[in-house]
Amino acid sequence: MYDTKLHDRSSAAFIDALRVLEMSWETQLPPDSQIAIYVLLPNRKELRLSVISEQGFNGVLIEGYDENGEQCVLIAHQATLQFFCKVENVTPDRPKRQIGFDAHPLPSKEP
Image (cartoon, rainbow, N blue to C red):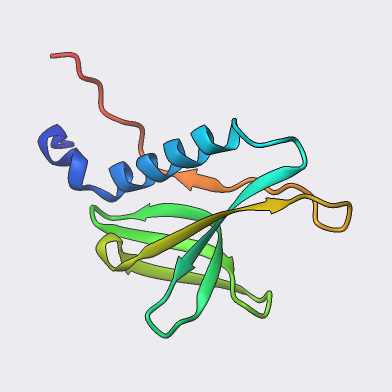
């Protein structure tokens, strides 16, 4: 059974918070702009996030692209990650992209 008391520490809550931030910021942008989210790694590399998913209670799986544009996957504990978000212009050669957030729905607050 899902323990709702611990939900605020779970990777699902982490992903939900990131999704809410991205969605609220996106509504304030002009049509020719989009949000880009990067994962900052300890070795000074960064990954452009395409999809973030739960991997157990504290783990996340990140699908994205490295600095060379090559597709990659990172599995990590949520506490080890840092994110950098920025606004990018959308151009014909760089169309708008959607970021995927895959987490279990928030539990109901009903008794």
